[in-house]
Amino acid sequence: MFEIDKNKKTIFSAVQPSGFLTLGNYLGAIKNWINFQDNYNCIFSLADLHTITVKQNPKDFHDRIIELYALFLACGVNPEKSIFFIQSHVHTHAELSWILSCFTYFGELSRMTQFKDKSQKYENNINSGLFTYPCLMAADILLYQADIIPVGADQKQHIELTRDIAIRFNNLYGDIFKIPEDFIPKAGARIMSLQNPEKKMSKSDENANSYIALLDSPDIIVKKIKKAVTDSNNLVKFTDKNTGIDNLINIYSSLTNKKIVEIEQEFENSNYGIFKNKISEKIIETLNPIQEKFNYYIKNKDYLEINYKKSAEMALEISQKTLNKVKESIGFLSL
Ligand code: TRP
Image (cartoon, rainbow, N blue to C red; front, side, top):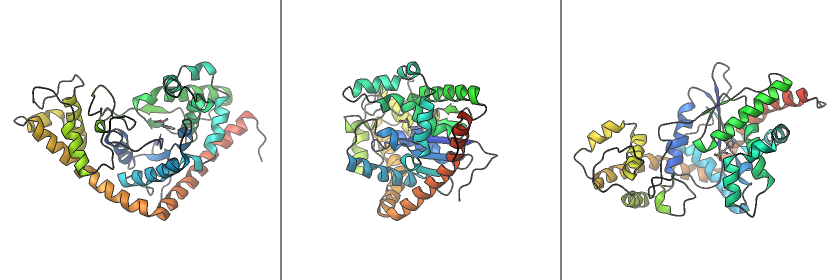
């Protein structure tokens, strides 16, 4: 069973259950999570409290949480080696979030680019949760005294704010929080849209041909890769100009762990058609076992429940210690 090892650094990361997962999420984030499990104390979460800053249909939301939980297990998140819990199951998050919001300035939150983007996108629902979202994220991280926070580049500003809040709090009350660092993985970090290599591959893209979903069938994968934009010169050569072919080479490189030069050599005498067939083959080879495991887990709700329950209990135990220290330091009366 999982136990915190004091000699290892602690990693915390979370994703929102706000849609299905793409190959970009897998190669950019999830694959790293899996690799971290052997060398770090890993604490992962489905950040469902964050997701309700945007309106959700209750049934879809509910189904998506359990599906995503199953899918992460299928990808290799191993509840024997790490904690993988659902944020709303652990009440310390909402509680510390309130406290931290009293140590975070209006001006700081107003500067968050994600807040600015989202308040444009959801102009009829600019709720205060959307605004204080980074305080909840800071609570997620600081509760576990995490050292390293692997995130996408879009979350870097939130981690910086988390550090600022933690330093401010420590200056006032002593050494309560560990100051975390972000970690933005390079390899596979920027898997781009198959239709527009200037844009990140995103599950919310209106054009389904722009992404591969982790649960896409082999036929769909082949079709989408065939349609992926390339260059006109028919050469498998990296241009370093964020072109479609660069994106495909990156994808192939992430899937096979081969270097770009090796890939260029391998396909020296091939055209795009041959290269694309090979990419589809590798994607299918990678996703097939994940899909099989997913289909198994999603039918075994009891097994999923045992795991998210056990993880929530462990997360509560760890986070409660930090929360108690925080409350005591502020001067709250303990019970
Ligand atoms: N806000 C993150 C995202 O949308 C998810 C998240 C919530 C998170 N809490 C976190 C990421 C804590 C890292 C650490 O991607």
